[in-house]
Image (cartoon, rainbow, N blue to C red; front, top):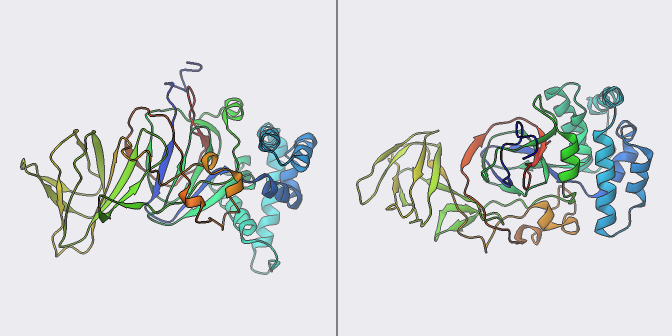
Length: 371
């Protein structure tokens, strides 16, 4: 491996996120047309990009290769901007945006909502990471607002950043992360620029689909073989039997309390934060919640993908830029896009709190950095 101190394995690292609370994230590059609008509107952002890169954006042909080449030139130019220049321009940008966001400023009615959201996101990131030019990332990355129960998938080599909120995150077995900004950790801009796919548009946003004939079991299935996630809800006074699985699995208690039982008498007391390993072909557990409880028991269960041929999610690369018509427009046909990916080792879920890191998950020796 290259740089084994920072990249400890050669696995790729696709990721799946399921929101537990309202969640904010950046994922995938914006369409080139949107970026061109933002370059024209925000001179501070434009000043951090070379004239050659800006010209490539404005003159890019309609074909995908031309657009990806222009996007790469822009991203590389921005990430290579001298720190003194980016810091100076960021201060100017923040001063102007703060004035525009003030109470005495009236927004033009013709300004699209996604542009206002972009400005607010930059101000927020600048507060979290003072002086980091990565706060301008919403100018070239899609900014997503995800409701509890909704999910999205990030394939390897796609940029993303988690900004605020809580999620269940499931990923392939890799510890590699290539970071570029919005973090005090090791940054590797050169590898990040070289590894990205430069696909444009956002991922599908999906609220899961009922599984095993029970709408209390919601399935979140990405187009990769390593993993899928089930979120299972058992309400007070109810019981629910987990499916018999031919593969090992793990689950974590997200909220509520209850107990379990099975034909072998294996009993567990459920409490938030507890996690358990279930061997392959283990007799199914039955979850139960006392009717006097005030809220449901909710768990997240992850295992090798058993529904790879019927994914509920697709990455930005799978969806393609032609399917993405803006952050506030997620057509029904986009939500049903399917694809396939090679099978690799299993992974486990984890809860991830709010925080940002401009990075991407990698294929091979490097993982995708999170912005």
